[in-house]
Image (cartoon, rainbow, N blue to C red; front, side):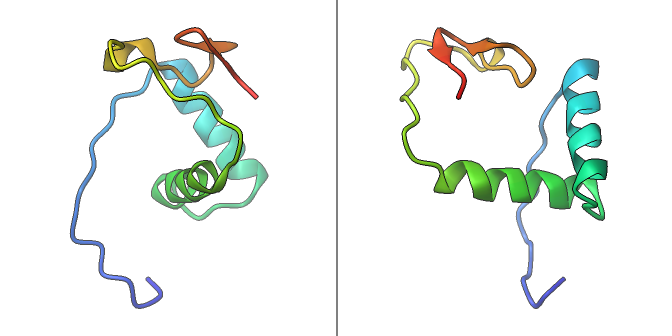
Length: 76
């Protein structure tokens, strides 16, 4: 694990299409696990510049992975 103790667990729910997108990306970049793929995507997302902030009135269900737009926020 590279010396990093992971003490917090995060549970997320995905649609079948979102899981398929995650697994397709994971295998295309040779990530060893879904967890590693999600951590890498989080790292890239947190390092990204130029993203729009979400409307505070939005709910969790308003955010998706495989749609062309996310709650009215254009995807880059």
